[in-house]
Structure formats: C-alpha cells, structure tokens
Image (tube, rainbow, N blue to C red; front, top):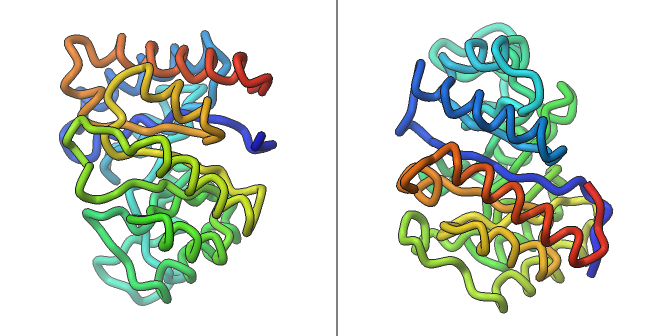
Amino acid sequence: MKSSVTPFLMVNPKSYLYGEASLKLAKAADQTASDTGLTIYFTCPYPDIRLIAEQTEHIIVTAQSMMPLSPGRGMGHLLPEAIKAAGAGAVVLNHAENPLTFHDLYQNIIRAKELGLFSIACADSVAEAEALAMMHPDAILAEPTELIGTGVAADDSYIDACVARIKAVDTEIAVMIGSGITTAEDCRNVIIHGGDAAGSTSGILKAPDSEVRVREMAEAICRGLAETGRTL
C-alpha cells in the first residue's frame, strides 16, 4: 500500500540531550535534511525550542508534548501558543513516558490543527493505533512500549498491521514506527513495508557517532522510497 503522505525521520533525543549538546545534533540533522531533501522532525526540551529553531533552517523543531488550554489561566501548564511562538512546528502527544487521557489527546489534536502544528500521536498497540486514527492526527507513532530502548525493532507483521489498519481509517495519516529502531536498515524496512516514517532515540544516541547515524537513517529512508517507487 503506497502512501501520499510526506515521508520523514524523527530524531528524538528526549531529555538525554539539552542546551548546546541538543543544538549540535540538531545542526547535524539540519544539514542532513538539506542534503537529502528528507523531512526531519527534531524533538527537544521546551527551553531549547527557540534556541534550535533560530539556528536551523531545514528541520522541524518538535515539542515533546503540550496541554489543551488557551491563553489565560494555566499556571505551570504547556501553552500551545507559546510552543508555536517559540518556533515549534510539530508536537508529540501521548508518548509512553508522558501518556494522556483520550479526552486530552483529542483536545490536543484539535488545538494543534488550530495552530498549524503537525501532531504526532503515539500508540502502544495496533488496536490503539486504529483507535487514535479516528482522532485524525497528522501522524501516528506506533511503538510497542516494551520494545522502547531495547534495540529490538517491531516485526514486519506489526508494521504491516499498523499500516493497513491506520490507512483504512484515514490515508492521510502518516504511519511512523519507533520503538527498537536502531539501524539504517530498520528505517529502510519500515518504508519497504508501507510505513511513512521512522524515529529513534537510543539507536541514534548509542551509535558510535550520532550525527553519522542520523545521516545513515535518512539516506536509508530515501533508498526505501526509491525502491518502492515513492518520492519525497
């Protein structure tokens, strides 16, 4: 099943990197995005959003979450407008390390659409991915929680099932596979099986050279697209 959705790579350092270390990897990802033409989403801690957005041109700086509120009361909460104003172009929602209720997740997806933020909603299973598709986020990050950080990628049947069931609901949702994505070949395999994107944390941060690994993964996604007759 081919997708009309723009393919991408998500570089997701979580909170392992911050400040100058986060900026350094972001600049390398920015150069890779420029060189390959592949869309790259780069997540970072909230205080680093403006720092990275102002010093990169090609990556899409991505907030790690937000809360469904409007300007006004909300002391200590993550205001979507503030995230957008700082330079974020996307937001991750419902990650296993920061889960949301379905009500808050849906409200966040609505707020993201209102502000033009690309929403990446996380799902733990094929069934949850199918349910989240009903909320029509821009992308669904399908990753079994038990595989996060293990270096063991989800098997081909999981990728196939996620693609089939999400696309059956909405063909315009990008299907992204995350947990256990460690090598460039893992990224290529996601694309070969009809996925639109791959993302990684430990596969990048534990590599001998994180900047090289980002480039390898981006190039592998491009190869997979070429092999399946898809374009950037």
